[in-house]
Length: 324
Image (cartoon, rainbow, N blue to C red):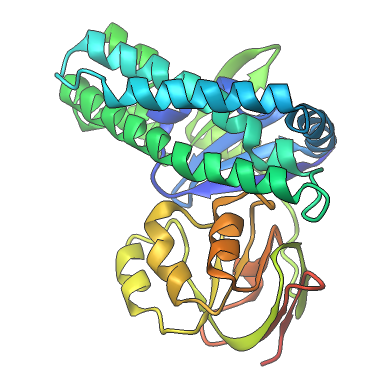
């Protein structure tokens, strides 16, 4: 049984992950954190099952209308939250963030992988609009939870679960958590491993052999062809804002995936290639809006392509070739 690497995040740590992980994927999923950031994985078999169920649900007009209605309610409630630093307000914000991700993950890659970019074009456009609006609420709620938790428990709150922060629990393995932690679902319960135990378990669960290739295949997110010089920005880079500013106009952006804070990099790019994401990822939606070629979900673009490489991006055929 294998796992598919779904996302990398350079900001989220244990605090927010403990809130939304129960809604992530299905029962065969795990999250892993180390100095490379937070990464999410879904079992290969479950990935296909979730995509099949997700496509049937999202193609149901009543289901999608209800999803949109619930998302609008959460965005409205989020705007009215009391931001006074109190434990009770932290609990309310955390519960709302949990509800938000319960909806957001119904439009995530693992539930939209079976949608067709041609036959489901209108649905994809509608879901994309929802995701772009809704992700900002999720980000704002996450920032609110973080600020409230840090006010209550100090900077170590990032490596505490939300229950530990709210209950004022003493945590004696913070150093190990800061080194590595792994969250895994086990009979609908979440178990957490920390430190070396987390690292060793991760190596057993997901340890693909790195493969150097000069041709990559992924999913077409926005059609077109372009050739040019690659520019790589990692989501986990400590100088990510500096890298975005230094990115040359017209370069082909190579990254794990994009987030709202990388919009400027997308606007500078003549094309985008990512490791992660599907046709409804942030990258795919922005690339279609900017009308630039984009291939997502190559899984290994950031391993095989470096800044300065000359590449040919043929998004019509979902192929990326390394020329030089």
